[in-house]
Length: 281
Image 1 (tube, rainbow, N blue to C red):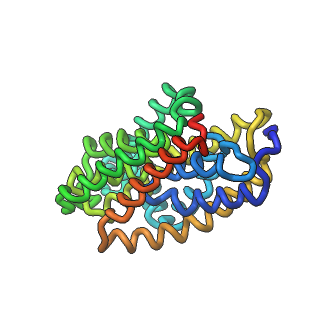
Image 2 (cartoon, rainbow, N blue to C red):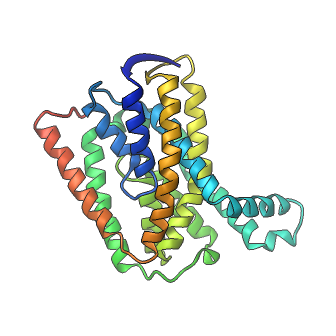
Image 3 (tube, rainbow, N blue to C red):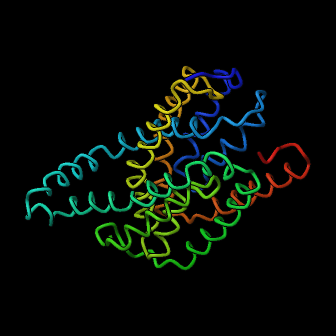
C-alpha cells in the first residue's frame, strides 16, 4: 500500500470512529466518510478502499456480538452438506439463506466495480440517495406490518433482502437502511430486520474489506497502512457499542429519528455543494 500523505493518524482515527458509529445505523457510513473526508484539513476523499477496510473492524464487532448465533448457524450449515436431517435444522436454513442473500451484492459489486469506486461517489448522488431512501424508510416503517420473525424467512425474502443490501453499493443508500427497509416492507419486526441485516452483511462486507486490503497493496491510496489499521480498530470498538444500543432502541422505537437525520444531512450536503464548500468529485 503506497500512500500520498493526505490523511494522517488523527484524521484516520476520527474517520474510524465515524465508521463505527454509523455502520449499523440506517444512515450510510460510506456517505459519512465520503462527505466528511473532504472537510478535514487534508481535504481528501479517503477512498473506497479505506471505507471497505475499516468495515472489517465493524464486522468483527458483529462476529463478537453474535458469536453464539454465528457459531450455531455455521455448525448447522456445514452439517447440512451431507446430512438430510440436518438440512431441516432452522439454523442450517438460516445459513443457506445468508449465502443466498449474499449473491446479489457480490455479482453487482463485480459488475459495477469501476462505477462504485468512481462516478457513484459523486456527492450529488450521495445527497440525493440520503434523502430519497429516508422517505422510503419512513414509508416502510409506517406501513410495514412488523409481525414476521426470522424463523419465517423464505428463500424469496432472502433474495429480496440481498437485493436491498446490494443497493448500498451506492454511497447514501445505507446497507443496513436498505435491508431494514426491505424487511419492514415484507412484514418483519424492526428487531428481526435489524438482526438479519447484521448477519447478512458478514460475508459481503468481510469479503469486500479483505479484497480491498489485498488489492491496495502496492497501490497509491490516500491513507497509509498504519492509520488505516488504527481506524479499523477504533471502528471495531465503537461499532460494538452501537450494536448493543441500536438493538435495544429498535425493539421499542421507530426509525423516524434516522429519517429526519438523513433528510437534514442530505439537504446540508446540497447546500455545501451549492456554496462551493464541497466538490462533487
